Image (tube, rainbow, N blue to C red; front, side, top):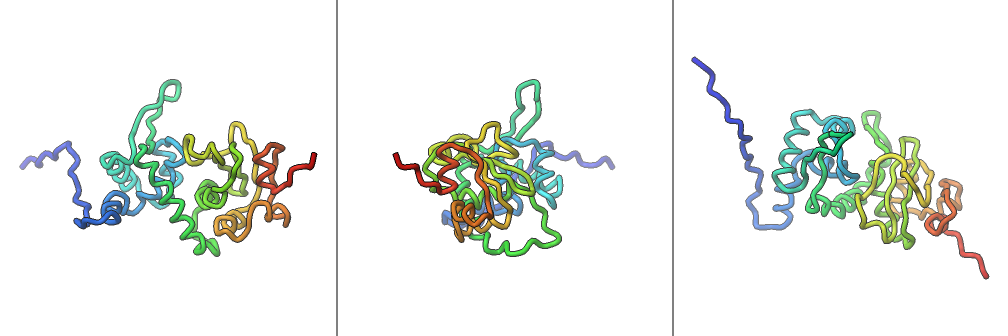
Length: 227
């Protein structure tokens, strides 16, 4: 007998807790395994499928494709083609998806105390330290771009009045940085836990801030010179 032809349409999965509760409704959208980590990756801007797969070690290609499709259907992400000469297909968060930044930042703060020791099986990427650090440096008053250099690599983010503009953070070094913060991942987590400030870390010789502008001066905790 000929095999029954499968429908081209993707079946809609029932994924609701069926509870009239804001928390339950939120988990209907982002409660599946890997979804929030995909959001974490896309908070830095549009990414290709292959890049997402490379920075989400442990996720299968089928699960990643399924979660991205669910995020598109749920209005969290969109897929688009970059203009030439790139012409690559990328995924990016919608405004609704970017609204998860405070959720991810709070979750990173809550989970930071558990990162006391790196297990042999733990993968690591430099930009995974961005969310704890964003929470720690949320009170910076001077606007600009901060580049963060770790042994694992670099990432950058906007501080002060610029923080609300564009993506939450970016991969790799900044095209133009107003300040550069050089430290290790252990100190980065300590800053995220609120154990000390960047100025205290600089004073103790555990971190270095490069740059001469107001943002670098604030990070170092330098006092303005008297007239």
